[in-house]
Image (cartoon, rainbow, N blue to C red; front, side, top):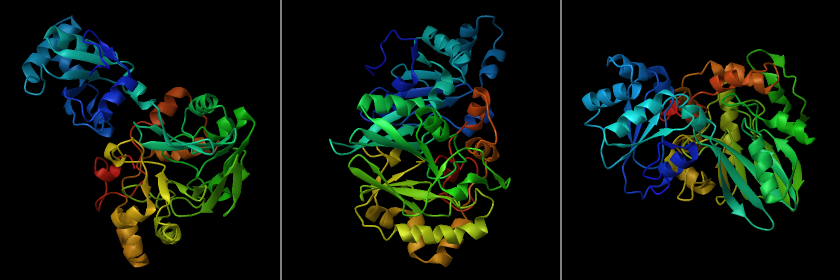
Length: 417
């Protein structure tokens, strides 16, 4: 726990993230979440190491005790309700939406002798945390995986010969500009594998700011529910199209199913950026355009096509559902040959179209209403302010088929994937 000094009163989202990834840490970690029940049920902080999670809404804490001293009220509540869940040997991290109310809870716990720190900026800070890891880094090719852990979203920067392409950039486009500057490369192309519904893409804005092309398949330039064409300028991608980035070739493969314009990007004939097609533990859902019956056979044919690629093709997905999908290096990836054996969705593809259609139909998770508006944002049909953008992106994505039949909110299939 050296990341957190013994006299610290708060912790940053990056510091907490590193603690959650430290599976060898000896000090127990407790998270006390004081958000409202609906917010807590929608999403919560998770990590690779075991964590004790305590939840009580903040207003229940302060209303239960008659005191104008909010820290004292929190201390009295904790002494009466949380003794069995807290440990004097643990680091206790308190969490709320913005980091205000939870600061009083942390102070109250410190008065009781607990080692307690508040998450600075709360869940808003946690939601905006990005982590960059390098899949490969050499003079010829650098491939970076940029994750947004709170949403289980993954994006990529491919650099070679002083140039770079960005694939599936997430909402905060400045991260990609900063990374390119650190690597000493110039972004020459921005690509979205599809018109996303689970998160706001910075793709068109980033491309416009940099004066480069924004690339998208034309089938995804139309809102599938509204039947209205988007207003975002883009350069259409065709199946088999290639780009040169320095010494490296990128090839687009059109694989409809999750959306009609869904793509994967093959980098250097070795790395497959699968977007919302194949994940490490699952495959994408085919119903977000409201056409599950029509799109599921397309999805099957696309997955069959991808399964013809070599076993050593490294699958780099656009999402993950659980922290343990990452390897020891923190990178979410797996060879296609391994996924043929272990990925349940791909095993159903190998069993034939009838088996896959039945499998997919029984595992469609709940449909988040915000996805309709997120798609509008990404097509230029809705311009949100920062508060609305954050509200639309609350919680993990649900782009994958559920792990079990009858997927619903709160099930594994309703988590990020």
